[in-house]
Structure formats: structure tokens, C-alpha cells
Image 1 (cartoon, rainbow, N blue to C red):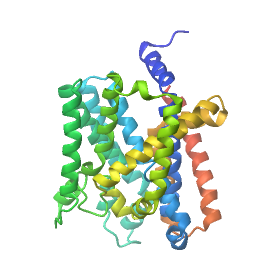
Image 2 (tube, rainbow, N blue to C red; image 1 turned 180 degrees about the vertical axis):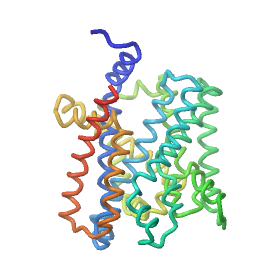
Image 3 (tube, rainbow, N blue to C red; image 1 turned 60 degrees about the vertical axis):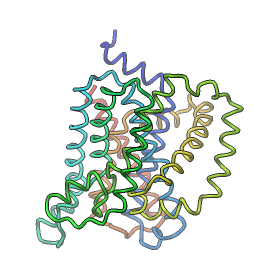
Length: 350
């Protein structure tokens, strides 16, 4: 039986980029573990070196990697301007719906008067899906205006980083609707987890990487020997700066609203991270574990939604009460349940 043309194109793209799916799969696994550490583990564990390592792994190699790959694929997408723009709008409002879903048990307790909390920060939290939506809208505009213009894309990246440095030092006192709206763009509130002017630099970088690769700006240097040399230099750099970087990644407010210096550090780390997993994936690509991780990466949006629906609602009942072994059990349980739900969702959609 012949596949429809669109399905055949999708399949071809997935065969062309198995490493990207593998990296996204690793990133979503790291996101799941850090969400459990943040919401399930006791304060003692969260503040310990185990918690700091967990936050580091769920920070630099996770969300930045996910956003860079998203930007790369936005550049290669066959969707036209209108389709990509609408996709961005759907992701943004889908993120708000997810906020309600993952906080449903908490919002219900607030509604019943059992908790004296303001529900709006939980509904309008500026998380990664609204960021992805805004980023796709911005990338659709950039693609339309500068699709084959490498220099303007670099200038835009520098501009985003400069604006980020400026707004990160704003001390704005806002009230009412403006605070909820601006939280999606700059870090003016505690619920501004992924503001546009910090995090858009990553998908824009992915977009630029695609432009550079299309122009063969660095293909000749990608030999195995050169990759090992680059990896060795990066490992020394990361080890020397590890204490500084982990002090940022383990402080959630500093991590969510980091500036250019940490962005550059993340970029260097992710180059090394990609090289490491390039070699790992090369040797285990036919392994069932590798196939499973790639499957998670191909269905990363569904995985992200289901894990948050589970973790968010369970956290209302057991917030910061679980010891290390219990948290580890929860991690494997959430990963299994998320995989099962994603499997049925993919099967239903197909």
C-alpha cells in the first residue's frame, strides 16, 4: 500500500535526521526527571548535590537543545508562511490549555477554597509551549524576509541577545493584565519561565545553523578526527567552568532569565553534547533503546504534554514529599505511563 505524499515526505525527513530525534528523545527524558526533582523530591534532596546535578541535566542539555532543533526544522519545513504562523498560534494557546490541564487538581482546590492562591499565574505561566509558539511565528516572518540571507539572520541573533541583556536588568513593577502579557516576552514575574527575550536566541540559532549547513560553511571540518579534537577541547572548557555553570542551572530564576554569557556556554556544551551522542547513536542506532529514544523524539510534543498532565496533577497531592528512591520510582512510572499514552495517541491520530 502506498503512503500518501505528505506521510511519505514526513517519513523521509525522519530517516534523514535520526540523530535529531535521538537528541530530542534524550532531552525530553531529562526534562521528565527534572520536573520530578522540582515537584516531587523533598527540599533536602532538591538542595543537595544530587538535586543540583538533576537541575543541570534538565537545564542546559534539555530545553536549549529542544529549541535549537525546533528552529532547525522550522527552516527546513515545507509549510508556507501562513501554515507556520497558524502552527505557532496553535502552540501558544495549546500551551495555555496545557497550563490548565497540568494544574487542574490545584485549580480545583483553589476553586473549592482549600488553597488560598491566585490561580492566574498557573493559567498564564510562560512555559516552553507558548515560547515555541511565539518562536515559530517569529521564524515564519524571518523565513519570509531573510530565508537565504545569512548575514541578516546573524544580526537578528545579536539583536535578540542585546535586547535580552537590557530587559534582564529591568526592574519593572506591573499590575493587572500587562504583567501576564509581558511575562511571555520578558522575565517580569516568577511565572515567566521561558520568556521570549532570553529563549528565542536558541530556535533562531537552530535556524541559522540550517542556513550555514545549506551553504556548506562547515561540512568539510566534520571528520571523525576533528570531532574528537573539538570534543576534547570542549570537555576541558566545561570542566573548568562547571562550578559557575551549575550555580546558574541550579538557580531556577537565574537559569530561566540567563544572559548572553550563559547562552554562549550552553552553545559550547551542546556542541560537545551533540558530538558525544553522535558517536553513541552511531554504535547503538539499531538497538531497541535507541529506537525507543528516537520514537520519543519524533513524538516529543505529545510526550511533553502527557508527562506534564501526569506530573502536574500528582504533584498537587505529594508536593516535595518524596525521598530519592521514591522519586526514582516515580520517574520510571511517569516515563512508562507517558510512553503508553503517547503510543495510543499516535495510533489514534494515524
